[in-house]
Image 1 (cartoon, rainbow, N blue to C red):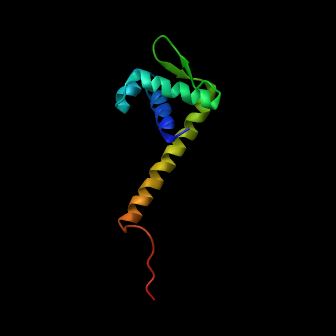
Image 2 (image 1 turned 180 degrees about the vertical axis):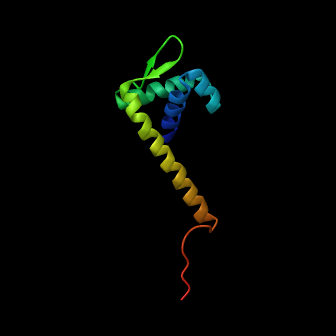
Image 3 (image 1 turned 90 degrees about the vertical axis):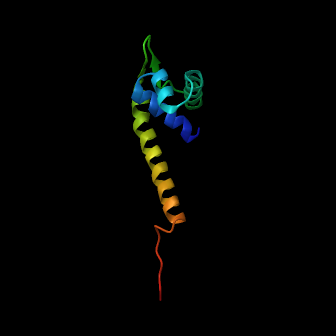
Length: 96
C-alpha cells in the first residue's frame, strides 16, 4: 500500500462518489475504482458499499478514514519539515 491509495480512499469517502473524487484528483474514474479495489484486496476488507448513485463507507471504512487522514497529515508535515530544512528555515545552529 502506498500513500496514493490513502489519498484516493479519502477523496472517494469525502465526495461520496468515484466520479466526483476522480474529477477532484484529476484522474479518470475507472483507474480510481481499480486502485480502491486493489486497496480493499490488500487490506482484506470492503471500505465502501457501492450504491446505485455513489458510495457509502462501511463501518470498517469509517474507522480507517480517520487513520488515513492522520497518516496523510503526517506526510504533509514530514514534507514541510524536509523542505524547510532544505531551505535553511528550520533547524538549530550553535555558535560557540
